[in-house]
Length: 180
Length: 391
Image (cartoon, rainbow over all chains, first blue to last red; front, side):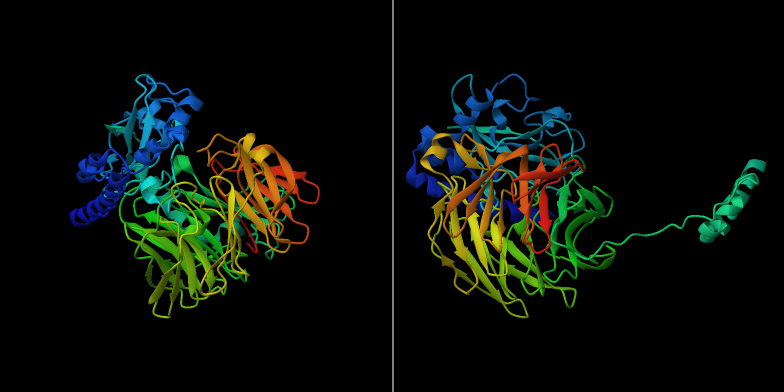
């Protein structure tokens, strides 16, 4: 299992590295991708979005749902702009915490959401909590900046339990990992 | 001690009686009961496939380790049967209707234990299992999408997509009922079968990969030039498809149609066209939902679920179905839906019905002759994908 996990890490690391290189050629946050490589994140979307501020899906979503920062059990909590699934916050966990008895996934995809309080855009790692069947509470579907699964590093339909001891989805978390 | 002995005796009696339940039912009736001859315990079978039968695949989100496939009589709006399935299943129908295939993942202890992935062969009339074919490379675990598992147009091979993390397609021989190997399609996903030994896949760089494999599943892969922009306007995963002619209609986030002829070894890309007029764009109409597009093969009409945006609402349920002539590229009708729908399909007969999976959830059927509602049937918790015979 450990060997498999390392392989998985390398796979996503490669994707991240490639993405980061593409990003750095075009945009100003050249160090961002490289800084996150070790953590297996896939930071492509936020930067290309930022380049098209007029069509920034994070800002559009925040406006559309009246995003808020107080209640992480509501679908319009600001970090969930690209989250698809049951909120760990409603299942004994939190926006960045897996519920008891579940298995935190070491892999994720990264989107970006606008914090309406400070007006800044943050990188959000959408990490699934795995190892138990669904916690069927607080189903939310955000799709800001989300792409089809043939672009896996930007897709929220995938069971993001790669590298965990179980591929069974329990709930969705949304951890802040950076700021644009 | 006495109670224990009695229990043991009772258990022994039950065991002895167990094999002859039906015949002995009357013996257990009180003496005052009037026997009525006894109704048999019958077993139904499905009728032969017909165009308006709908198979509805349901990944049951609150109990995701289980899934179901509902067999619906689309003429009478009734449930004909329910099939059991596992985690994030997929489904396919043999082109000659001889088999139904369910692509499944299970764990030995329910939600834990040893994982096993398989393609299961079902008889289409009595729904009995003919074979479980192991998929040793696993399956792509994702909210089910139709093009993640397919059958070749000649019915010979099953194709099951995988991302673990290499992107491959597992090939199962339906004659031998055996896994034959995997075809690697680096950087690509989805399966569009175009010949007995060939399929195409969409790639993250906007190209189309076409894999041709031999009997040993050794494959050659060719990549097309870029035919869509994966950054600015990616194509969605569900398509209008004519598997007999080898024609695929991709629809993009921005409402563009990309027709691709995959009937030959080299795909032929026809000019893209838009579902939307300037007026539609001003009103912020977008395609959206899950299985959001369907093709009626004989008339080459495309049916697309539409809603009012904004952008990035590509999974939002549709409030209307727009009908286009794929030949003239013109909209020819708009059907206002009684309930918003996430998925649609059409029957392939001469008097087609439109089947819409609503958020309620329910299946609402419309007669495409005049857009009138035929009926509604409610079932399940989270039905998602629709299949019809002759898809």
